[in-house]
Length: 319
Ligand SMILES: [Cu+2]
Image (cartoon, rainbow, N blue to C red):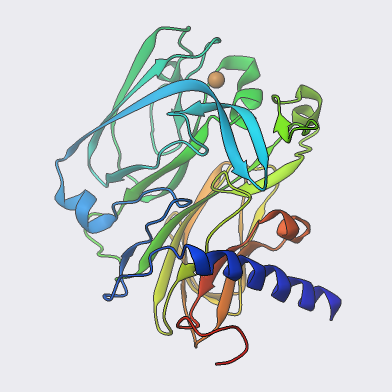
């Protein structure tokens, strides 16, 4: 009972924050990616598959102090200055070209799980250098990408060099849905008196012992505005550590697509570290819903919930 009250309180407090800056509020079609300051931009299947069959991506490894929210900052190693790195979107059969330029102080590389290719293409590349990976992507899915830097790769991934790469199916139109990317990852360092995490602690990395866990590199999330009957599709990528137990409080996942497997009516879906899945759920009725990692509910007070507000703007408890 107390836990239930806690969850409700956390979701509602998320909504209270969201009331000020709702995300994706004005989309009368009930379809298309959510747009907002704390959700990674997404173009979606229709736009990407209608685009050129050659896709070019530019990534830059940079050391940046990022704002995680809740007064916490982190000296991260990033792709393009953000946590997670930019979402790379392609369509099945596209020829992709990824150029990584290293603006950081140590060697970095790039491994995308969407590729079937010689790992020697992944780098690493020394500071001020660049590398280019070219390949045709042949398998739809939500894939992880991350740094590849030899024996120290794990430290680099856990310092922030990770992101999602989505390969949309070309011949199977996905149902119209509100869409978002969800990248789950940890931070492996402790805050100083100013709230700054000065860097990654290798001891925590070695133990798989994060100080914080996050969705999309943020401890704070505005609520997503939805309506009853809306279909929501999340492209989930789990950086780790541990299996991500993806659950939406208040409903059941209609569909989960993981590789070629398609599951129906799943209460919680486990996404291992280094993997991804597409999960879909329908907003059943007016109210509040929350996407969580059910094995990380201890991080709810640190903002690890993505709230979906289908209250229609009515004050809480007065619907
Ligand atoms: Cu690296």
